[in-house]
Image 1 (cartoon, helix red, strand yellow):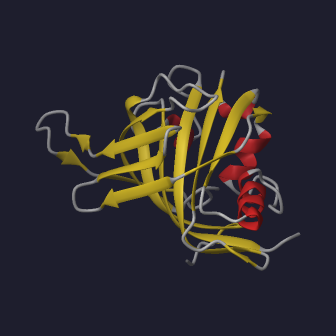
Image 2 (tube, helix red, strand yellow; image 1 turned 180 degrees about the vertical axis):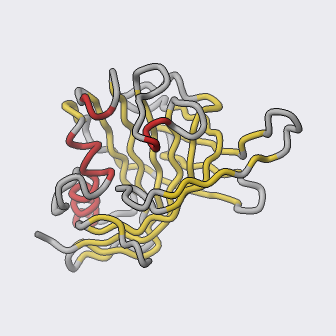
Length: 213
């Protein structure tokens, strides 16, 4: 098994209400799941291949809960990646060289029976911790915009965090609202408007989350 690790930051948006039932091992709000994930690698490697500074995104859609499978996925990799880096990121994002169910990439790939061609594009990610506003973008393919949840009475930014000691994606995430459009993807996301989003640090390896990171 090739040793790998990525340390960075992600923005994710799905079609459920803020909080996302999946985070609490519950069924999705309308029985289906669709999502876009964009992440930046501040430091990382796959074997001897360095991944520092690269970005990637993935678009997913399931006709029911994720664990029932039959989903479809499409990976988008930073156009700056070399052939070796692209192969490395594809391996990580399809669950290769990863313990069973150790990362979200393994789980999502295992639950997708259709994998569309991997795309190459400029990928960007920005998030302002002070305002809670950010976006993840695969140019011409898909884009997620996030903002704070508005308090139901005052309208002020409503801060919420989720901790998952045994999760496969992050140890702690901040919940926000997001909207995603995927005009250039083989997968059309049409339910993600003002729905659940989260931002989180990523500390992933082939064995799962590095808890002490």
